[in-house]
Length: 321
Ligand code: GTR
Image (tube, rainbow, N blue to C red):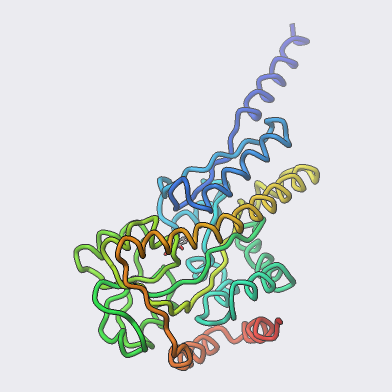
């Protein structure tokens, strides 16, 4: 009798683990570049592990807002996610360097930094907090938009109530420009713009478009003040518990999904801009970027006071060609 029990138990265990599915958090709508990248990650895993690992992403923020989801992935309540490194700052100190306004010259500079040793250093800091960064996704550059008037110079933000992501650094950034900053969840911004709780916010073209913020805040001014990468992250215990072979499959699937995401990102950015302009959004370039950069000096000074150990990392980013 016992002879039969053991194999049956083994079978039951195998069946249970094979049925286990990784759950992924995503804030964006299903056709967004991040979402399509995450879906691809799941498909590749399924294919390459012959169904031993399946990963399903829950889009549109249905698993909660970003700060909570970061905690959930650290704790293992959610298995993986794509996070913007902006709201990661309060948890992983080193990630704040990429949230400094105008730290990157352009998107290519950000790629060179994140795909090299500095990216690895940031990953190592994240792993200490329970998150393994498998690959970096794109999020373009963020600019201000609002319900009132074009932003041409810093003074145009005086007294404006601006929504920012959850990180004190962004509060300081808006205050240094004379505005009032309100940290708020992404999903609450549309209603807040519509009802005047805030006058504006800041984001890239695809987020401005896909959330319909452009319908209620029709002035978009190309300050391009933030270029913040996003990570495809997985719970560290989950990842470290995999065989070396499976870790390689997971890493490779993540990297390939990032290649796709970056391509889709470039396409979607152009499409989103076209779409919102056709819908009547008033877009303006900002010619005097230097005035905005100058206004950030106290933000950098305070940052260095609060995080002296990050000075070297900042210098290294600036020195990356
Ligand atoms: C988007 C980003 C999201 C989220 C959002 C926000 O560009 O992809 O992860 O951070 O901005 O403003 O909250």
